Image 1 (cartoon, one colour):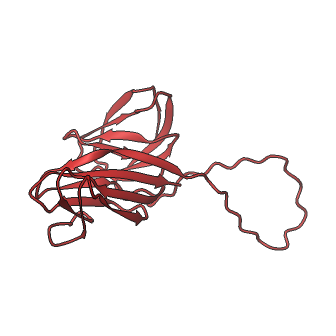
Image 2 (image 1 turned 45 degrees about the horizontal axis):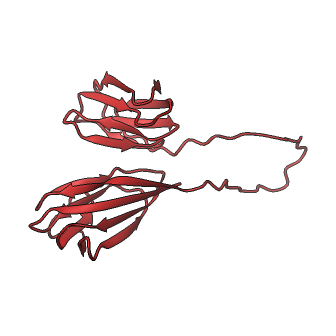
Image 3 (image 1 turned 30 degrees about the vertical axis):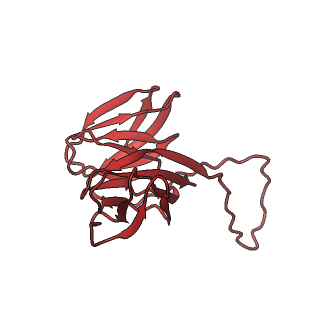
Length: 201
């Protein structure tokens, strides 16, 4: 595992070697990964990213504060859960346990606004990486002219996926629950513009 301290707007680069997966074990805030072809990918604590096609990784801190993170490069995919911090205050001695009680700490949800994404006709783009901390994703079709977006996995196409037909005057949208990877395909002859909002736990 690697411990990273990233200064505001700072970056770190290192070789991938034979690793195929990047696992973000801990991170105070989201970070950006830049691939060899220049694609910028957002990652949060608990995320696992396929880096089998990468030769070098660049991790950057887009925030105005120092971010501490722990990452792991692995040859095999490892299922992770977001790290939990437990604090004990005003503790008491326990002499006997009569029954197990399951408790859950309620965490305030976070809203994350993404830049609008434009997709050329008959092309597809990844909207979100898989994330264990994302609860919902809200997608709206806000194209300048009426355009049909097809939403689905990496195999989405003109004949596969869920259609969302709309434009700026009459935007159409969809809310998707869960943290799976999501792609969009432009099934029209005009540029597709999509607005995005994430809800994280």
